[in-house]
Image (cartoon, rainbow, N blue to C red; front, side):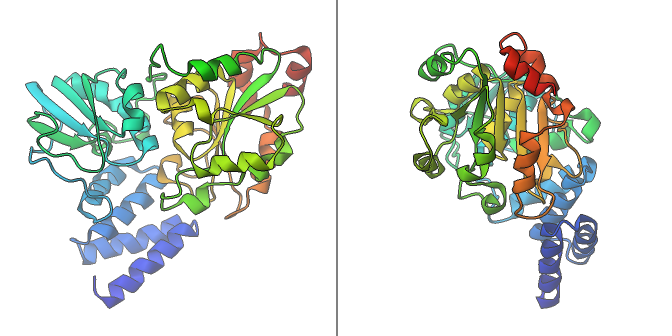
Length: 371
């Protein structure tokens, strides 16, 4: 891009992060027409289309991410799969982005398997045990942002986040059948024992921060203290599903407020087992929310004013996860009304929760949820 185009590109980004998506879209459409080989402009245009729910154009432009420096996937030398039958061959599916992305899009592997032979999924090692049980996956290998031809024998390859371009051109064609994750029988035993000790309370899992290396982490992550308004609700027991440095924030509150499960969650299979035993998960936009949705568990996702593209705009549900409710910031950086809404949810927000736990709740808690 020349200097003038670079300035226009930066203006487009500013408009996008201000929530002025339509104006940003116009700028990036202009830039991609004027500079058709600029991958970053195409990728930014993809973000505009996808967040607006235009998957048909969004997925097409999203393929340009592979030509950007920050999102390129090292090639194994095998040709890219384009949706054709590959009977008798092996395909390598490369989980090319974060934990949540892999959980969200592994749903498509069964459809790939239906068109061919052997399916090998390369994913983060923390996900290997959980994703190995997904329909269509024949084998899992660990992936650390680079896969060489020596890692596995395969004839074709595709990055996992390129698969929706083949199978889901519209919102209506998203395969939203859940659950599609299967928990290993030996997963999370210690965490389950702790959770199951609470039999007369609504058991809620909390995650308040994502990985700090995420480009949008400052917008999506919260501090544990911002949840304080929830901790005096009677008949509720909280369990921390938080991993990483943010888990240290538990030291600043009373131990009786929330039970820390971090020591018992070795990988995402353990986390999934814990989520399965909980009545509700409340999470910021991080992988825990995806796991809960993929398990068909009730999950309330706390979403920043300008969210990641997959949560789209102006909707309280998700076409990706039927059991998920979205609680959105009304303005940038303001989580206070989000937590207030969680504390006093709409009746419809509780529907899936009540349906799952009505037989377990005390009369006191059941009355509180339905008033």
